[in-house]
Image (tube, rainbow, N blue to C red):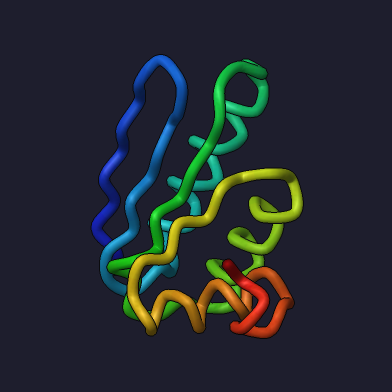
Length: 95
């Protein structure tokens, strides 16, 4: 199960995912994302640099978040592979 770290400041709401993004962690992130989206203020970012893997629900949620404008932060080679899968773009295009 993933460990989630939530950070809320004046310009951005950020969730850091560490470990396997599945089950209840996906549901928690989905609730947070919808609440922030309903408020309509600020940017939403998800840091997947520490994410080890995800299930199909986790992948689907991250894809939806990406499509709707959430910033996906990937700071490791493995997380860049996840970002490529999430965004549907080849790794070389993700700069």
